[in-house]
Amino acid sequence: KKYAGVQRQFARLSGVIQEDIMGMRVIKAFHREEPAAKAFIQQSDEMCGANIDLANTSAWLNPLIQICFGVSFLISLTYCANLVLRGELTVGELVAFNDYILMMMAPVVSLGRVINSAARGRASMKRLNDIFSAPEIPAEEQQEYPHEIHGAISIRHLSYAYEADGREVLHDLCAEIPVGHTLGIIGETGSGKSTLVDLLLKFRTAPHGCIWIDGVDLCDIPAQAIRKAIGCVPQEEFLFDTSIAENIRFYEPDTDEDEIDRAADAGDLKKDLGRFAEGYLTPVGERGRHLSGGQKKRVVIARALVRKPKILIFDDVLSSVDVNTEQRILQNLHAAMQGKTCILISQRVSALRDADEILYLENGRVAERGTHRELMTLGGKYAHMAEEQNASG
Image 1 (cartoon, one colour):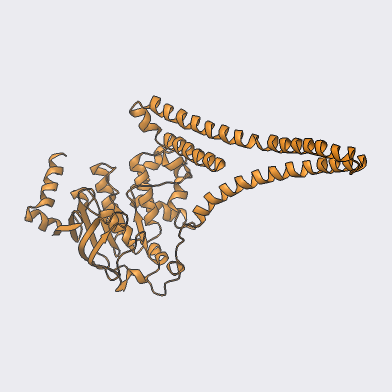
Image 2 (cartoon, one colour; image 1 turned 120 degrees about the horizontal axis):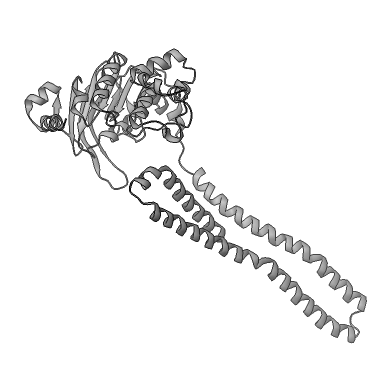
């Protein structure tokens, strides 16, 4: 129990350190260095206390064994001396008996150390078993899919609620996205846009009969096949601590430099390469800290394009770039999106103008649907959002 407590405290301390390092810019920006330092010191003190508690408990083991043997010697000498005086035991037998007790001391002390180590091992193994017992990807989700995925998506009366609290985030959602068409999705934060992406990628289990790919229920298509067919640019970009080129070819390790160059050009990244001394070989740093927010987004876009997927999903990827850069990226992506099924999620009306159909989501429901022109003519919430964004520049 003591050792398990030390491990739990070590995990908390590691978490605090990691958060402080990753959030260093935020801590400095809001001048929160002192509270962060106090929180670290508090966790360090608790870690120190847990280790001292463990050391105190462990330190009693050998002395207790020694005390037990000392008591046994005392009992032996007192009781056996009387037996010798009464002639029931010889002096030689008494000496031999005490020698046997001495011979037993070292193995018992070693056994105590083994028991101590075993207790630590059990505590460590219990924490590992919690990880090993986590549910694995079912074998059927890793099977080969015998058919080629072309990318036609049909969403039929999709409703979805989170298992944790039962809160419904999507309600009776319907949409048809033929191959080569683009569906735009817009709406306020929390309207279910990113949940829809998770369902399409099978990060969450969609209800049977609600999402169809090429006329096949999504539930009957292995997750491995779906994810190979989809190029997704997530809302939160993640870059590995390696070069720009290695991040772009992450999905396709055999990608040559020409394909990397074309993908970077489509993502509007190529023009920034002149700022980097080593070009595509420039290290991006941990989580891409050497790049700006817009540059990280463009690397992630290039990474999705380089695998030439049948379905492209852009989850609010243009929020961290300015309007001019947004338009350049959309123009460059136009050629890459030809012949592909595209889902473009954005908070900006300007990014959805050319979509074949736009859904305005509100509390998980489709409040408005149509093309950009039709929704502007309707004069509803979409048009109101467009006017507000135009007014703010």
